[in-house]
Structure formats: structure tokens, C-alpha cells
Length: 305
Ligand SMILES: NC(=O)C1=CN([C@@H]2O[C@H](COP(=O)(O)OP(=O)(O)OC[C@H]3O[C@@H](n4cnc5c(N)ncnc54)[C@H](OP(=O)(O)O)[C@@H]3O)[C@@H](O)[C@H]2O)C=CC1
Ligand SMILES: CC(C)(CO)C(=O)C(=O)O
Image (cartoon, rainbow, N blue to C red; front, side, top):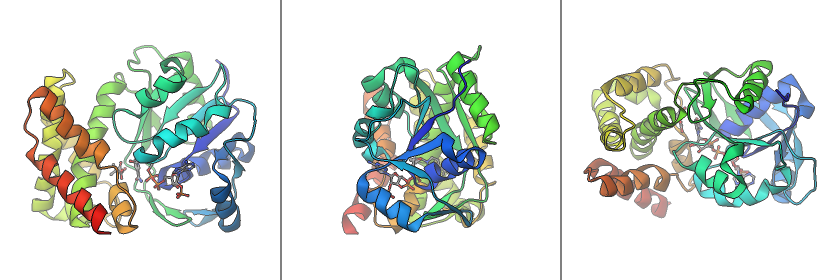
């Protein structure tokens, strides 16, 4: 196994900064952040405060030539993914593995179609309640990253190297048997909580206390369960129960990434969530009225800002 010594990360937001801080705490020079000139200027001037600790990361512009990274972590929002794919080009070499920490079921295939699926591992982060306000990121629960190949009965060399890095950096992690099922489970979670929290402007505590909010959240998620059954991924009621259990562990003041986007007047990931559910619903003949309504409401909120 080749040890991961050079990590490049793009997307220094709630998730990216939380993961970058862990790797930097292990070894500041192990990680470089890819960002354009304007971002580098802002980041270098203001620094990052992650759980109140100041971080000044090593920054590198996309056009700068550099030795290829052993691992690239991608943690941008979905609508920034295509631009990001171009920006990581100078960091990709023959031995580079790429891991997307993004939500959704398609970022791996999108990145892999440019750089080759053989260098991709699948991943998702769960149970982290990171909130970002400008250059300040705060979380109570770091949660874990689930990662691996599509199937992980045997640990591949790539997965083993990433596991070793996560161990050294004290990043809690799980390698599940099927990453495709795991990605779908997380997709179901985000379809359920991100969108309803954005419409209701509700932190996690509301879903923990108010039955009607919880019902709305799970009914949006059930449309994903139905589609998954038509596609042979077969999520079920137990997956909904696990979703509710995880939500109950999060800080009651914590907010989903989509609610944070709405509050900051930013574009949301609604196309990647409800948009995908409605498209797949049409393809597999599953009615998706709740996601259609959420899509229309969230698009309206975006336009009203
Ligand atoms: N927040 C959460 O709790 C969780 C989020 N996720 C998922 O993780 C992904 C990231 O979410 P989150 O961290 O909340 O998002 P944020 O909006 O907090 O962070 C995204 C970051 O990407 C940066 N960025 C965008 N475009 C570029 C670019 N071209 N070059 C360099 N940097 C760029 C932005 O920079 P700038 O701010 O300078 O514009 C921003 O800091 C999403 O898919 C989300 O769904 C998954 C689990 C939990
Ligand atoms: C599951 C949840 C809601 C928090 O980890 C998330 O993925 C997000 O905020 O995007």
C-alpha cells in the first residue's frame, strides 16, 4: 500500500474546512487547498476558525503546476462541481485517488467521467452538524465518513490507503459492504431533511420535537425509498428508522447545508435532490408529489432572495 502523504482539497466550506482541519492537525504540510486568486486572498487575510481554533492552510491556485496529489478531496456544492473538475487538473497524476465528500448519488460518476472511474472511491459524510458563517465553522458532532469501492467485501489498495490516512488524521470512518446502497441511504436523508428544513427554516431541534415536521421529512424520504425499490437498491422502513435515529443525535441548533444556503441567500442543491427524485420518479413510474412541491417551493425561495 502506498501511504498518502499529499492531499489536495477543493471546497473549504463547512465540510471541507472540518476535514482539512483534522488533516492539518496531523501534519499541516500534508494538505493543500486549491482555490482561485480571489479566494486565496480572502482566506489568507481572514484565516479560518474551526471550533474556535485559527487555521492558516497552504493554498494553491488551479493554474499553478505542482506534483500530483496522492488524494484529492472534493467538497463543493453540486452547482460548483463542473468548474471544480477543471480546477483540480494539475493535481491529478497516475497514482491519484479522488474522493468526493459531496451529497448526492452522482458526483463520483461526474468526476470519474473526466479523470477515470478507476481513480474514484465513493464516499459520503454523515451525522456531522457543521455550520459555517463566513470563515467560522462550528460543529458539535463530527460524524463519520463512509467510503470505499462500490462493493467492499475485500478492501482495495486505494481504500486501504485512504483508511490509513483517516486513522492517522483521527477522522472517524466506516467502510460499508455496499457503497451504492450507502450513497442512496444518504441521498434519502438529504431529500428528507435538507429540503424540509430549508422550506420551514427549521434547525434539527424542530424535527426532533415537532411530529408534523418529522412526518413531512419522512414522507419526502419515502419517495426515495419507493424509487430505490424499483431500481433494485431496496431501501426500506428500517432505513427510515435509522435516518430518524441519526437526526436525533444532531445538535438541536444545527442546520442542514441547504438551510444554511437559504439563510445566506446562496443557490441551493435542490436540482441534485428533488430534481433528481422527480426525474427518476418519471423514469421508474413512481409518483413524487412531495418532492415536486418541495422543488417548486425551494426554486421560488431562491428566486425571491
Ligand atoms: N454542511 C453539512 O453539514 C454537510 C454538507 N454535505 C455536502 O458537502 C458538500 C459541501 O457542503 P458544505 O461544506 O456545506 O458547503 P459550503 O457552501 O459550506 O462550502 C462549499 C465551499 O466550496 C467553495 N468553492 C466553490 N467553488 C469553488 C471553486 N471553484 N474553487 C474553490 N472553492 C470553491 C466555496 O468557497 P467560498 O465560500 O469561498 O465561495 C465554499 O467554501 C455539499 O454537497 C453538501 O451537500 C454533506 C454532509 C454534511
Ligand atoms: C445529514 C446532513 C443533514 C447533516 O450531516 C447533511 O448531509 C447536510 O446538512 O447536508
